[in-house]
Length: 580
Image (cartoon, rainbow, N blue to C red; front, side, top):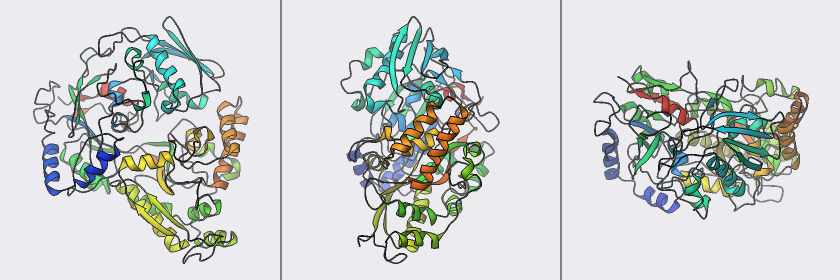
């Protein structure tokens, strides 16, 4: 989501779990490295990335390779699809290699899901079990058949290994009968249907030999997807079309995934036509990108998700709800939208944090019409009444300790950096807090969040067909682990049995009235306890070019999310084709 400028190294690829490599790479930023990297980008990358060098995609001779890029900085060679911080997951190529059971439309909950590795499926009436019928004729890239046993193994692996159960699904049992695989859960999964559909499958004969799945680097991945890993270098991850793909060989022969240091360098590559899809923020995107060519598209679909300021509620000073409330009251969300995203991400208005339009029907009656307002005087009163001194000058907590915090977002994530700096300035100016703003590498930032080694940070929530994920990501006790251990969500260690129980009730409630009552409880806890401060709607940053390749999802044909790092990217990859 952000990028440094061309005066820094441009697209070093090494994966998201090697801190040492990252830190060394950061010190390598030099004009010489920049020039070399820039040259590789403008030529489509050195190692045969140009489709004219062996690419039989049928694209015009001048067409660059189909490239997907993000501003994640240095990466390391880890293609483990189960690890969210691996390069494969972070950059998205995991879903060119591995496939999900079903392809749901995450932008339209009413749309019929597309059968994928499962040719059919059926839920029980209470959503506590689902039976998948596994497609015939699918082979792994090593030539072995994909079987129902592979599917059952992939799900059982998640059940037996909590570290890789990133979906946080409450598995009970998995069984096979002929072509059918039945999965049961300990609670109804009405709110998690898309997560269940999106479960990807790995080959049992490969992964059963792995001693620790959560630490496996998987550098020679065997998958069933439309593409095969061809090469992994410091310049680009190159994939070739799978000639034996069950859905037919893809129309695009070669694709690549690149990682830039920041939004600026990624933007330059997009504008130059050397990257065809970029996940990142472009300041003044119309004049900078879309106005440059009628084939350049910026599309920002959003749903039930938001960007928020997450607090570490397990340690001072944000263990005090009064300080959390005061910070929320001084933030001007409209300014964040205008300055941070140049209007691409709309400011949240409802005190529930639910995005306008798509979230309106979920707002409890108690909170309808109640909106966020900047109230500096009110924030100061909250702190003064709670026993703080030096409010607005040099803030001290009720015990007389200076209130000093460190806030951080990754280096190069320009939109987040701009937003966080505005928040830090407001905390210092209006409340008198001592605020240090840091910009670590993306890997360091992620590791700190996961382990609870932070005071406050910007982060997003997942999208879903209901507000369950939005609130669960922040408040659900099922994610709760001690500081120092890795959390998959609830990074702020918010510990509320009432919230956890209400979320569980909402997920399992048999009637709409029961669901509404449980959701009203969730919203009340969220508003009263402020475990995080909702800021902006969370769009998918869809910047892409139709100049050389077509078939992308669009506002007129939103058959999938434009986010190419999600499991639905497999569907998009099968639809892309070169312009004749």
